[in-house]
Each structure stands twice: as structure tokens, then as C-alpha cells.
Amino acid sequence: MPFLPFYIPGQKQLKIVIVGGGYAGIAALVTFLRHMPDANITIVDPRSNHLKITHLHETFRYPLEDFLVPFSVLENRFGCRHVRAPLIPQELTLRQWQNDKFLTVNDEILEFDYLLVTSGSAVASMDKAENIFDLHDFMNASGFALMEGLPETSGKGGKGERFISVIGGGATGIQFLFEISHFLRRRKIESKLRLIHAADRVLDQFTTGFSTYTQARMSELDIDFHPNTRYQEQQADRILLEESGTGRKFDLPSAMSFLFLGKKPETLLFANAFGQVMVEHEALQSIFTAGDCSIYHSLGSHTMTAQAAVRKGKLAARNILRHSGSLKLLEPYLHRDLGYVISLGPADAVGWLALEGNVVGGIPALMIKEVVEAQYDLLLTGTDTYVI
Ligand SMILES: Cc1cc2nc3c(=O)[nH]c(=O)nc-3n(C[C@H](O)[C@H](O)[C@H](O)COP(=O)(O)OP(=O)(O)OC[C@H]3O[C@@H](n4cnc5c(N)ncnc54)[C@H](O)[C@@H]3O)c2cc1C
Image (tube, rainbow, N blue to C red):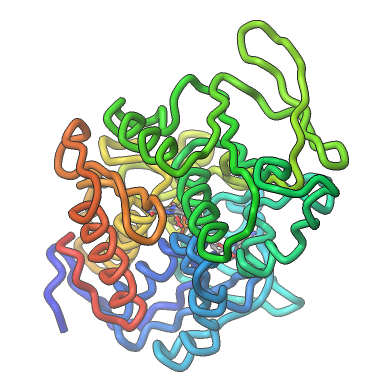
């Protein structure tokens, strides 16, 4: 068995419940089984599949099924159990679970020694018209299938008559924008694409090098850009917008719109530097958290990224194992992101490597992205190639 510093195992095989089988949950699962192959692990997740969500924009090229791993496959592969249900842990419930050491799901009592909450961040649900799509839609259907709902061009016909709008120029919106643009070209669909973004430049959470590179590619692909513009609502085949600053309201034709307004955790849990959930300044000894739903009181990276989720998931698992042993010496979360790459369609990407100002574009960025995705695919098979 691989060596885990400061872990002196006790006799007992642990019962562990993981709430949420996404990136952080899977990273934790693999880490547990590496050091305690007989651990009794239950994943509670409302979906029937693990979703490789970082590939979702690629469903304009590949079917959604390519990015789904049924939990039944993971059950067989890892000898764990999947219970299909949502759990929304509130502070009061967490205290209760800490005292009881069990929780009830689908009328079944699940006993645990440790509970790990990794339920990610939810996309806000909203009432929306038939021609508006958001991440929820992409979690249930491939991008190319959603495009089949694109209405015919108006009587006048011709390019420029029909617009498709992408709203949100953050990392997710940009990845979808470029995939849609390539999809339209590949299928020779006559439609003009535009991006609506509330800030003055795309990818404004990154250094300006990201925006300059991406906006230049957008111009080459003839994508209209409306900066400093806020989306209000879609009405039939028009979108209502508001200019930031002046507050001027206006509308534009849009046959189909894609909303990428960001995600926010349904459950946000605060944790100490070791990943133990804090409730009223007290660490719950047997309840840990990781991934997008967690904020650790530590110097480590808090970006809502797959790499931070994987690192937190692995750390929480290591600390649970250590906590169950006789030394109980835990490791603080200090992970710093090593880079971040955003894909710009099938053949281009932009990102940073090592230092945030070190912007890389084109093939080198694309290759980094592929290595990162391959590393996660290996983790899903049980092979952990992450250095830490
Ligand atoms: C389109 C897209 C592209 C992205 N691309 C990248 C990228 O290229 N690189 C990168 O680093 N990051 C990327 N991200 C961000 C990254 O995917 C997330 O940061 C990462 O998935 C977070 O992992 P997680 O385990 O916290 O949550 P998730 O991976 O979202 O998993 C959460 C799990 O919890 C389950 N769940 C939800 N609610 C409940 C509940 N109430 N009870 C039980 N289970 C529940 C869900 O079904 C899901 O299985 C992307 C995100 C999106 C949306």
C-alpha cells in the first residue's frame, strides 16, 4: 500500500459517505481506496452518472454520453455503493449528523465514521423561454441536438438575418461560444453569432493577455461583441439588454440564446485549513468538505476549478484517514493553481502556465489542456498521477 505520511492506520475499516460524486468526490474516493482498499464507501448523488463537466462545451462535436460515466460502472470498478438522492446539508443538520453518526436517505439509514460533502455548485434554475438554453440543458442533451431547435431563417433569408446570442464572456461562456461558432461553420448553418458580456473585456477575471488573444480570434470568426452590456430577458425572438453605466435599455433580434451567467454553490460550507466543516467557530470532527461548495480557511487556491476540486478532494480524504489513525496530525490545504487553460474551439486555446501573467495561446495551450484532461481520465480509472 502506498505510504501516507502521518497516517498510522487503526484496525477498523472506515464507513465513509461522500455527498456528491463530481471531481472532488471521485478524487477523494480514489485516495481512500489507495490507502484503505477495504473502506466501505457510499456516494450519495442525485444523478445516475458522473459528469465530466469540463468537456460539456464539446457536445457540439461529440455526444453527451461520451462524457458520462454511470455510477454503476464506478460501483463495479471501485467496489463502492451509489445511492441516488440529493442531500442539502444545512448547519443544523450537519451538527445532528456529527452527533448521530448516521443520516437518512430514501428511508434508509446510512451510518458513517466520516462524512465528506462535495456537492459542487449549482446553476441557478430559472423560468426561461424555449429558445434559451443554459448549463442545465447541456447536462441533459448534446449541444448539436439543442441546435436542432434553431428556427428557420426569416422570409428574407441570407446570412445576417438570424442571430444566435451567447451571454456571459467568462471561461464557460467563451468555451461554448467558440464551439458554437465552429459548429455553425462545419454544418454551414447561416447564422450570425454574438457575445453579450457585462464587463469591458472577455475573460476579465484573467490578465489582459487572455482578452486580447480571445477577442482577436472572435474578430477573425466574425463574432459580434457587445461589452458592458447586461442581459435582461428574452422575449420571443428578441433579447432585452441594458447598457452598464448609462442604464440604456435596448433589444436585439436573437433566434436562440445561450446563458452562461456563472454558478453559485447551493450549499457553501466553511472549513478549517484541514477541510473539517466549521459550524459556529467549531470544527465538526467527522465532517469534511471539498470542491466548489467549500471555502477553506487557508492559503490554498479557492478558484472554482476542477484542479482545485481534485486537490481539495484528495486532501480531505488524506486528512480523514489520518484523523481515523492514532497520530491525528492533519495536513493544511496549501495548493496553488499551476495554470488554467480555456479552449477556443477544437484547434485553439488560451491559458496561463506557472505564473498568471505567463499567457500561452494556440497549440501549446491546447496540449496542456489535453494533458490535464487525460490526467483526470486516468484518475477515473483509479490511477492517480497527480503529484500532490
Ligand atoms: C462547462 C464547464 C467547463 C469547465 N471547464 C473547466 C476547465 O477546463 N478546467 C477547470 O479546472 N475547471 C473547469 N470547470 C469548473 C469545474 O468543472 C468545477 O470547478 C469542478 O467540477 C468542481 O468539482 P466539484 O466536485 O466541486 O463539483 P462537480 O464536479 O460539479 O460535482 C458535484 C456533484 O455533486 C452532485 N450534487 C449536486 N447537488 C447535490 C446534492 N444536493 N446532494 C448530493 N449530490 C449533489 C452533482 O450531481 C455532482 O455529481 C468547468 C465548469 C463548467 C460548467
